[in-house]
Image: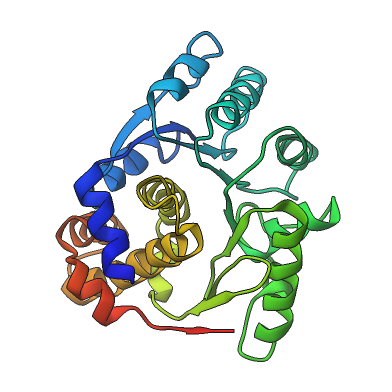
Amino acid sequence: MFREMLEQVRQTTPLIHNITNYVTVNDCANILLACGGSPIMADDIGEVEEITSICGGLNINIGTLNQRTIPAMLAAGRKANELGHPVVLDPVGAGASALRTDTALKLLEEVDFSVIRGNISEMKTLALGSGKTKGVDADVADSVTEDTLDQAVAFAKEFSKKTGAVIAITGAIDIVTDAKKAYCIRNGHADMSKITGTGCQLSAMTAAYITANPDHVLEAVAAAVCAMGLCGEKARLRMSGLDGNSSYRNYIIDAVYNLTPEELERGARYEVR
C-alpha cells in the first residue's frame, strides 16, 4: 500500500501552498521537490486565497508566528476548506507561549484540518486547551515510550474523533491514527532531533502525500511518516566521521529524492493497533 502512496506523489506532482516558518522554509521547499511535489511559499494576506486556489493542498506551520501572518493562515485555511483542498496543521511550539497556543486553537476552531502533525506535548496542548513544551520540543515527561504507547494511542484516537483530522504524533515512536485505526511507526534515527526542521519538512511532505492520495488519507500520512524516518536512517548510514548535522540535513533530502516505492514498502516498520 505505501509504495502506491509514493508513486501517486511522483505521478501527480501535487502543488502545495506552504505558510510556514522562516527558519525552515527553504528546507520545506526542497523536501517537497525531493519527494515529487511542487512548493509555493506565500504568506501575505493579499494573495494567500488566490495562491491556495491554484494549489492542490495547504500546509500551515506556526513556527514563527507574527501578527501579519495569522490572518493569512486563517484566510488560506478557510479558502482551502471552501474548495475541498486538504489542509495540514503543524502547531510548532503550541504551549510555549500564549500567542502560539491561542493561534493554534483559533485555527482549529475556524479551519477543518485533514491532518494535525506535531509532537506529543503540542498535541496535548491542543487537546486540553493549554500545556507546556520545552521550547518547540516535546516535554520529556510526555515522551511516547513502549510503556506509554497504548495510552498515547488512545489519546490520539480520541483527539482524532474530536477534530475529525488524522493525528500524526512524531517522536521516538510515531503514531498516525484516525478515530479507529492507528499505525505505530518505528522508523527514524535519534540524530534527526539534532536538525532544525525535520518535523517541518515532514508536515510539508505529508501535505503532498495526502493531496496525491485523497481517498487514503490515513495511509498516505503513515506512508509519509515512514518515508521520512526511513530516509533519516539511510542518511545516517551515509555519514562519515567528518560529517555533522548540516551534512545530515542534506543527506536526508537526498535520501527522500532517491527513495523508491519498493524501498519504502520494504523498509517501513510499523504495527497497527
